[in-house]
Structure formats: C-alpha cells, structure tokens
Image 1: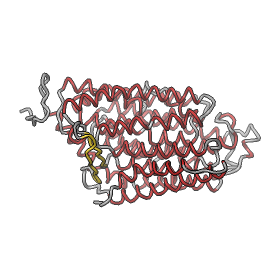
Image 2: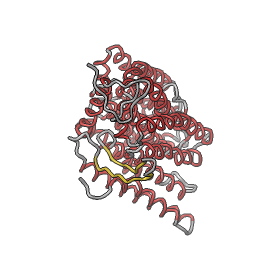
Image 3: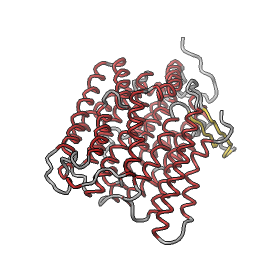
Image 4: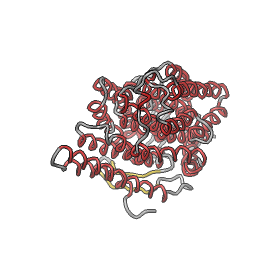
Length: 512
C-alpha cells in the first residue's frame, strides 16, 4: 500500500494547475501559449500518477484501496473519505488518460479565451477523478454535480452556433435528475445515520423504501448515461461542443451514470434492482435498436456518433442489470472501451472539421487518396465501434451478450441486432466519407494528419488493440470487485427488513 495520499493528489493537482494558469499575465499570445503548456504538463503529471496507482493496485482484492479518511463534519458524521476498487480504478485512469489528449486536440483549434478554456478543463479533471474516488455520499454528490459547471461553460462559450441552447439543455436535464438523487441520499442518511458508502452498503433497507430510492437514483443515472428516452440532450450537446468537449463528454461523463448504478443502485437496493431489471432490459434494447436506426439516417457526423453512444450505453445498462459476473464485467469493459473508441471517433471528426469547417457527411468523399493515414486510423476506430474481434469493442459486447443470454435468450437476441445495426451505420459513414465519390474539390485537397494529431491518435490506437488482444489487463483487476458486488447483491436478497420501522444498526437474520 502506498504511504502517501495518491488519490487526493490525483484529484486536486489539476486544481493547482488551474490556479497557476490564472496567475499568468502578459501579452495575449504569450498567455495563451503558457496556459496550454501548464495545462498539458499538469495533465501529463496526473497521468503518470494514475499509471503509478494502477501499477500498485491489487486486483486480487475486492476491498477499497488507497483509502484516505478524515472527519469533515463530526456532528453530522460526514467525512472526507476517498478510496478505489476494481470498479472505479479504470475510470480514474481513463479520466487522467483522456485529459492531455483533449488539451492537445484543442492546441490549434481554440483561439479565444484560451486561458479560461484550459482552466475549465483542469477543474473538470478534478471533479471527474473526485467523483470516482469519493466514498462519502456528500463528497460524491459535490463532485458529481460540480462536473456540470465546467462542461456547461465549455459547451456554452466555445461551442457551435446553437451552443447556448445545447448547454442549457445539458445542464437542466442532468440537474433535474440529480435533485431526486439528492433526496435519495438524504433518505439513506436518515435511515442508516451515516453518509459513508461502505456503511450504507452494509445497512439493509426496507423493501418498500428500496423501490422509491431506486427510482430516485435511476432518474439521475439514466439521464447521465443517457438511457432512452431521456437521451435527447446528448446529440445537441455533442454537435455544439468543441471537439475536446465531445471527447471528454463521451469518454468520461457518460460513464458516471453506469458507475452510479454499480456503486449505489445494485449493492444498496438489491431487491429493487432485481424487480426493475426486466424494465431496464427492454429500455436498453429500445436504446440499442431505436438510436441505431436514427443513426442510420444522420447527415451530421457528430450526431451519428452521438446516437451510436446512446446505443453502446444500452449495452452497458443491459450488462449491468443482468446481475451476473459476466454481464457486469462486460458492462464495465464496454464503458472503458467506449470511452477510448468514442473519444477517438470524435477526434477523427474534429480533424476533418478543422480543415473543411463542416460536419456534413455529403461534403466529404474520396479522402483515402489524399489522407491515407487518416483513413487507416479512422478505419481502426470504426471497426472497434462495430465490435470487430481483436479490438476492445468486441470484448465488452461479447460479455454483455453472454450475461444476457444466461438471464433471457430473447433479450440477448434483440440486443444482438444492435451489433448488426452498428455495423450498418458505421460502415455507411466510413464508405461515404473515405471511399465515396469526390464531389467537392476542397475535400480532395485536405492535408493528411500532422504530427500533433498523430501524437494524439497513437496512444488511442495502441489502447484499442491492446485491450482487444489482452482484455485480461482490465478483467483481472475488476474480477474481485465485481464478484464482491454480486455477492453483496445476492446477500441483500436474502435479508428481510421490517417495513414499518427499519432498524439502523441491527443485523438482520436470514430467512429460513
């Protein structure tokens, strides 16, 4: 175990970088350049720390590791409690991995208020990592909600023509759901007398209360994923956000909903999770099929990838609520894989958008002739999104379908249609953009990837192939925590709690 507070360093180091950027003074060009370098070096240092944390993480244990606990409000029993397990460790690493890529992607494309933009990304990184490390519900809620602020600014200030509309829609949708989550967290506090997440997991909740709390949590996490039919904010947010904003939104922010289900809904409310699971199966299938069909008719590249994200998140919720080890691990792997692949696809759109300043699929065509390296990189990520064996996209979908088949073969059959539809819309996009007729001369004159873009894509390419060929890198470190989660869920099903006066500290006897 490490002898220094690595999680606090990971969480608050970007905030220190943001404070340093705010002190930069001088000519506008010099300020912009220095702000970029400070943000880049800070994020790279955080990435190095995350790598060190991952190396020292013990995958054989399902317990929380690198735990830090300091009493915050003694009278209320609220603590500054941080820790990670196999469920959260890769989300911390993913946040640290994508942030420097986003900063590099913004290097030349962001020209106004560069200093403020870099500050927003540094603050966003703090809140993202804090969300996945928090083991106290108050701390979790603060980080979970605070993420909205820098993302709202990134979309609303540096976004496209309808950026204000998209930013407000994103903010209001996610905030409304989170108000219900706050009510659920307060109910849990009054029930168990604690805001400590491990304590809450160990405190049985009355069956009738579980259903109400599950619905409140579901309202927040379903919007954050987003699940069908509360997904409509996502295409607008993606289309209007700058490229780096779309990368971090798809790569990390969408994963907070799935993480919330795994951290709160299933271990704390097992009977409600079992009761609502069939409903979530069919909502997930609706997301997979309906949004895939919508993606097929899109003319905007970003909107097509945004709808594909909703479909892929449908696989995640399906896997999680199979409540089997394979399904949950598949959902976890799918979130990590989607974070890399979807982020990379948005970067691919950003590359051609920076050259032609349009996302209309019909404006491109035949670019394989003048951009062969780009065409190769784009093809790899497209095939990863489709779920080609050998890429990271295959492993998650396969495990999810395996878990779903064990629960209900009919559900697995309908979910599998999403794989076919996913191949249809991604191959259609690739054919039209890369091999389609070269109608417009300006598309045929675009330059291939420059060195900065190559530097950005190389680690993403490596990760998609590495996780596809050696998925055990992730699965071995998540297995113990997933098995522990399933055990907590199953143990919760055999514990009965009186409906009228749920005890706070009494140990429940199992039903004979």
